Image (cartoon, rainbow, N blue to C red; front, side):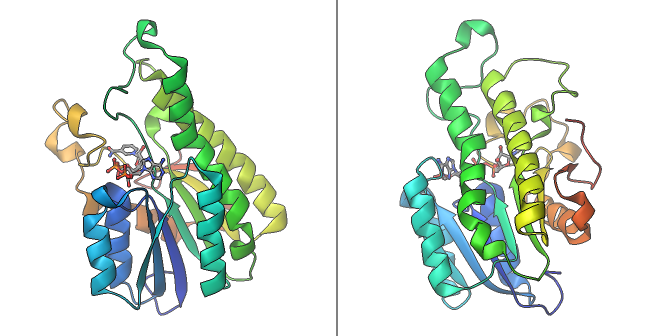
Length: 254
Ligand SMILES: NC(=O)c1ccc[n+]([C@@H]2O[C@H](COP(=O)([O-])OP(=O)(O)OC[C@H]3O[C@@H](n4cnc5c(N)ncnc54)[C@H](OP(=O)(O)O)[C@@H]3O)[C@@H](O)[C@H]2O)c1
């Protein structure tokens, strides 16, 4: 779909760094992608992305968007609708595991309702707000994909270790919200495939404090993760909408 000579428009949400920035770099090299829109939350962590937009002024456009603020999502999507009439690929790469004093909980003693709410706002609610506002751009007759990067630790069935209450629960909620979106899009935008994807442990700011027990062969570079996830997305069929896939294309338990 994206590697051939189609003319697809793509939106990468949360592209300031990590996996999102990796997607932007890859899509800029693909002939099948005509336009790449990429969002960042704050300029100070998005220097490389902004430099790329100067290097590829015709292909890459950056937009500011904090996905905890619905007005910013609405404004960003409105900007897209003035530029293009259809979108083919949206990858929501936004995610939060730690930030300053907010650290994943090791035990109930560390549970704090403000932090829990923040995990849900960033990791779950933003994705469904995006689905709400992006619907008009998905409603066309070409195949399209709305993928959100989830995490295997958000699988309830797979949880044997506990801990990371807010992150795990917010990713489980993301999976449920996207399952619901898949069902509703199935009626309102039937050519759109809605999935959540586990990228595998990837060498980014998010995983950095937790990498020491990860064997080197299980710690993927951003480039590898992006290639693997694109390969999974290339193969998706409409029947796959509403599912949760791992980086190798296998289905993960809810
Ligand atoms: N790395 C891994 O091993 C791993 C494993 C499983 C799942 N994941 C998931 O993969 C996705 C990408 O993570 P990553 O590893 O690339 O981490 P990352 O390098 O920390 O990137 C996270 C991205 O999310 C953005 N973001 C955070 N809060 C936001 C908000 N309120 N509004 C808009 N953007 C916001 C960040 O922007 P700022 O620069 O402005 O903060 C950044 O662009 C996440 O969903 C993560 O949960 C990662």
